[in-house]
Image 1 (cartoon, chains in turn cyan, blue):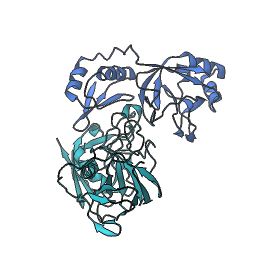
Image 2 (cartoon, rainbow over the protein chains, first blue to last red):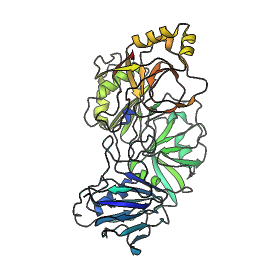
Image 3 (cartoon, one colour):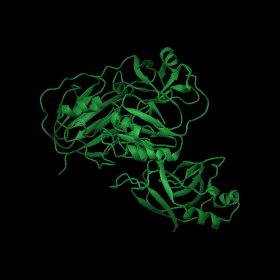
Image 4 (cartoon, rainbow over the protein chains, first blue to last red):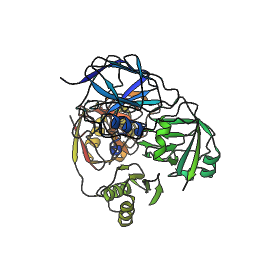
Length: 283
Length: 195
């Protein structure tokens, strides 16, 4: 019989995510995958999984599940309260669940997304080589619902120790950005980016981090749709920038003033609405 | 041809026409180490292997359209779309002539976008090159076949849309679980036939 767990409650939003399906943009398929890949990989390593195994991305934690077989789990992302059978356990450590035990994950005090890895990984059918839920195009499994049963793959033994660094959500994000490809649509793009300040809007999601604040002055009009990459900072006519995250559309017609450094995207995936954002143009 | 920087590991190659886009795409798609290659109306976005990309772009002949097509696809269509009469009237021809024109031409997938498996096909006869609807539909049924500007396309799934709809197909345009998920890929040659 397959090892499995039952979701008792999902919390605000629980999605199955792995490292996504990059390489399909020419078919109109977004890359998708965990927004904070660093945290998903860490969780997987802690339970002995390959880094790219499918785990859960939990918006503001809040999930509870019951194990139907013994398994090892790990919770990463922002520090949060974890309980097993009602007793406190540690995040960012492997946790052993016995058969029938209940795991509960609290709401993180800072940050947005916790990651839960389960030994053996979550087994659902792959779509275009990935098990990730893509909220823009509807590819991949549905968002989890209460009482869903998740089947797990064959577990491995964890290998050695790991360097565990809980995520620290910052009050202010200073994000390196490389100008282009359409910075020529803006009067002195570099100065506008350097001097502006924004906050993360509550309309942000896996498609993009929407910022509100300084209006970026740009030319009027639209560009014939062109390819977009993750981290592209698109500026619609209202001048309020949108930073494309993993479920972004593969093409778009608004000018991209610059592209955010890849290593900083995970901080945007963890930035709560209201977080202050500044850009640091580089190169 | 203009190369525009797009982050640390991608370039946006800007050219003047769809045929130049096709030439750039064909020149780059054989390279090893390319992570994404996304043709669009006037650009090709390429991610990865940027040194090889720059070399290949120096050698590319933009006047030479690629002559080989990876695949040929036939799409059966029932021509009973809600805008067929409007398209015929705009072109000053009969609906039957619209069908004849649409099925006689040979098309090429210039690029995909908007939704998974949505291919923008070029090669539309001039009489059928018509503007979008004044007011887009909130829901275009899956399989609808439409025209807009210089393009024709079939909708892989229900979405909002402003294209003039001339027919519908029952063929599967996109299935994420299939071995080849998208029926249409950039560079494919396409013909429509009466179902």
